[in-house]
Image 1 (cartoon, rainbow over the protein chains, first blue to last red):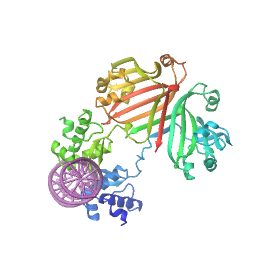
Image 2 (image 1 turned 135 degrees about the vertical axis):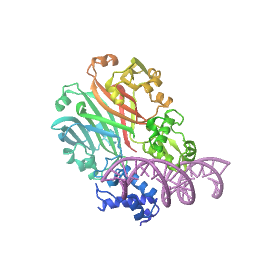
Image 3 (image 1 turned 45 degrees about the vertical axis):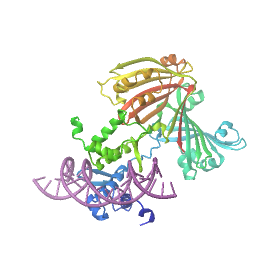
Image 4 (image 1 turned 180 degrees about the vertical axis):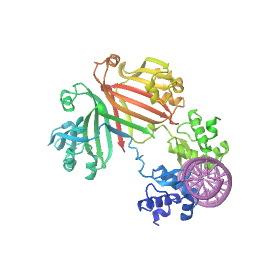
Length: 236
Length: 236
DNA sequence: TCGAATTTGTGCGTATGTATA
DNA sequence: CTATACATACGCACAAATTCG
């Protein structure tokens, strides 16, 4: 037993052991675990302690209990309750992305301001369209500082959500700010998105900060309202 | 005590009583509730039972406990730190509200669905305009269940943000869901807001749940883009 | 700085209720 | 009907964190 475990409350030690039983395959998803009385003997603790361990694992979505039947390991883990709270909900089955234009340039002064770059710095710029089932649903201008852009420029053509790509290159974020507004589609945007000019779009402007507080991404995205919702949940 | 309550487990009966204490204003957000020993005397039950009631209310986000300090009623999620940070940013100095129409009726079936009411229940309905410096910036349809509406119907004519009014009547919330989208102003909306029909509006649809999980508010608001921003911050 | 009082957290033992197989 | 399993409930003791004089 490690020092870490030694000072943990009993019920947490047992909870960890239970998790290990599942990880090691001794307890398999869908199957029953030993009854409370067996576990009491096995771990030599009180019923209170066993039940507290089980209760938390039920809360964590690892086990499921039902009166009268043995406690079981859940087949499919319960969905994350880490609750990011914000969901970009895109309607459509097959999501893809298309790059209209990309360059590496020294102008785009407004974007460079948002990225806290000097005027002489270069930025990667991508103009992209988000497709759902081969229909365009969003138009995006994406700006990345040079060090970041070099790492993910290939991914920007394949993935609309670039955060996984950033993570794979160890570019992590600690802060995201989004401003949501609305606008009427311009002729240019309407052409790209297959709309009538003037139709309402959801505008999302986003700035992402890296773990050192330095901006790593700035983007402006315009979504078709019929294929997009922005949902926020506060509280639990 | 109703028949429903009579057959409920003790800890659930007490949990309900605790929720009622908050709804009736006997226990207020941010303040301490009686200690476990005091509650044991009050309700004449064991500590196990009291603790199970409290544990579930902590899980529900209604109470918060910390070893060594009294258990407290949670502040409403908005004013506590925690993700996401959501800000409705309205441009303007002098903010006011104007009620276009209000009634108490038994139709409005869609809104009643969102409020989880039966078809025979009545709802309070307010059609309101948010003014900033005497210029309209938002149009809102507000639906309240009858018990809530009766408490704040006078405030609805004075305050655009009804949450403070709700709090003063001990109607507290534990969860808010908002969906943000965009739309083109109809002729009706354009007239009210002083716009050209077709102009883009920010749509916010909101459902608020009380501490017992029952909806206490449903609203649809359309903001003029030039006077409104919706900002979300995720992370530290 | 210290200690005493208070409060919640952890843990034990026991008894009984209730759903399931 | 019976055996088994989890659910509810009581009472007790001590630990650990906080508060306050």
